[in-house]
Every structure is written in C-alpha cells, then in structure tokens.
Amino acid sequence: MWPVTVQDVRQLALWRLPLRALLITRFLIGFFVVLPLSLVVASAATSAVRIGEEVPSVSLPNIMGANEVSLSSLRGKVVYVDFWASWCSPCRLSFPQLEALHREFNTRGFEVFAISVDREIADARGFLEEMPVSYTVLHDDQASTPRNFGVLGMPTGYLIDKSGTVRWVHAGFKKSDGLVLRDQILKLIEEN
Image (tube, rainbow, N blue to C red; front, side, top):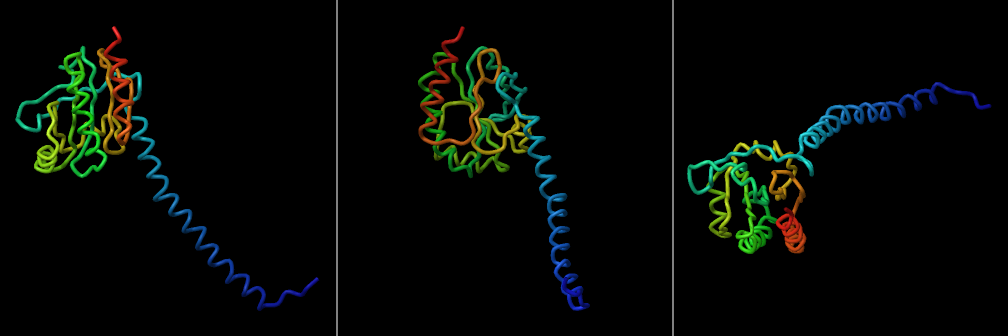
C-alpha cells in the first residue's frame, strides 16, 4: 500500500474541480437549453395536424387583394395546402410543379391553396412576380396558420381529401416529389 501525502490530496482536489464544473455545466445546458427545446418540439408535434384528422379552419387574405379566402369554401375538392416563404429555396422547385399539377387536375376538382408566411407581403409578391401561378395564394404575416398546423419547416404541404381530412403530409421539396404528389392527388380525385 502506498502512503497518501498532502500533495496527492491537493492534486486529487484540483482534478475534481474541472470535472465538477463540467458536470454542473452539462446539467445547466441540459436543463436550460435541451429541455425547453424538446418541450417546444413536443408541443409542436402534439399540435400538428396528422394524417386522418380534419383540417383546421383557415381564412386568410388573398395576397393580391383584400378579400379573405376560406379553406372550407373548397370542401368537395381535393386540396393541397402549401406553406411557403420567399426565402425558401425548395419553394422555387415546388411552385412550378404545383402550377403544372393545378393546370392538369383543376378541371377534375383539384385546388392548390398556397399560404405565404413572409412577414412583408412585398417579399411574397416579389417571389410571385418571378414565379407566377394561377392557383390561390394567401398571406399570413403572423404565422398563426402554420402554428395551428404544426409546420416545422418550409415548404410543408398537406393533401386534403374531398371531405376535409388530411390524407398526406410532405415536408421539403425536390424535383422527384412532383411525381409522388401527382400519384397521391390522382388517387384522391378518383375516390368517390
């Protein structure tokens, strides 16, 4: 057995100090950063509109005029609700494809209901000048609608059947997503 000296005890105490500080720091980060963030994500997930649920009520101003448009006015049609923003790069991919789908299926009871979450309506209008569309575009500068839906990123789309039930949810957008969306739309249009 080795004798323990005062020098050994001092070194042991110095070694434990950084470890103690590290443990306290990890606890504080966990308590004040990770826990609140997980609660926010859990809260968003619990308030999120899920497949099989009825779509929330939406009534927002048309981006090009003052009149309000309601999602309930489209009951009886297949509707793709698209949350987007002018700063969203994937939205530049989705808009032309949504326009093509709208033109292809509009006469068969399909509508696109695009909701801009830009704070400044001028930003959204500038985007639309570059990417004109024939479908309904609304503006929600308070971002209350995406909160009600539980949207976590842009773009996020909800495909809604004729009875107002969410049947498909899609986050993000890449070129190949247009074909997948087309198949989903066609399936809902052909349902009785």
